[in-house]
Length: 257
Ligand SMILES: [Zn+2]
Image 1 (cartoon, rainbow, N blue to C red):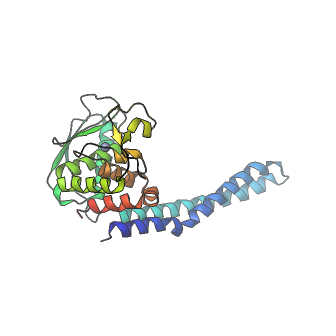
Image 2: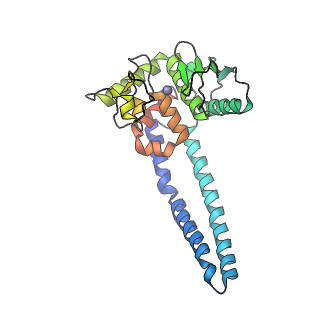
Image 3: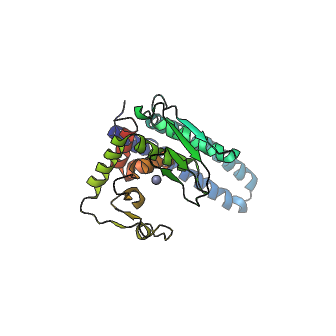
């Protein structure tokens, strides 16, 4: 099995390995532009037809390479046997239900942490708590806000892991402390330039992809695992490039290491 560091290297390497995607995208743009400007020519019809068939060929090749790249990426990210997450929910609306299922599926494909085996989690949409979602430590309860999507569900399940296994929380806190020594705590609303965060919400900025990763819960929780899970689902390649240390950390933690 790959270590977190090896996974980072593999994911970072995809960019070079699939360099051809960049070339084809550029080529595709050129053909698009040519198609657009070709209308003034005498043999317009022929030129357009020729360009159109070339564009189709490029489009097909691009789609194939993107698919291969995506499969290779997920073969690195996913665990050999996904976790069987036991979840209960009061969510009845079919669209909401679909996003919960998708979020659970994403999370389960990323982890086989033994501490979650046989544990269950509740995911509710009520009572209405506004825009933001949250996880209630000590209650195995996820409350989804109005804007929740599958990534939100996967994120909150990261908190669930931290809550169920306190050694995971300890590791997160050690990681956070190590990364932010000698850094001041600052207001999250200033760091995020978003006034919807409360006066008392503080974070260490560090070089995290978002200052939110460094949010301070006075040792009772952290955003290290949950944001890591979210980034693995959302933009794993950007994550591996932008914060390889955080990537490797969460990759290993999700595997019980
Ligand atoms: Zn969170």
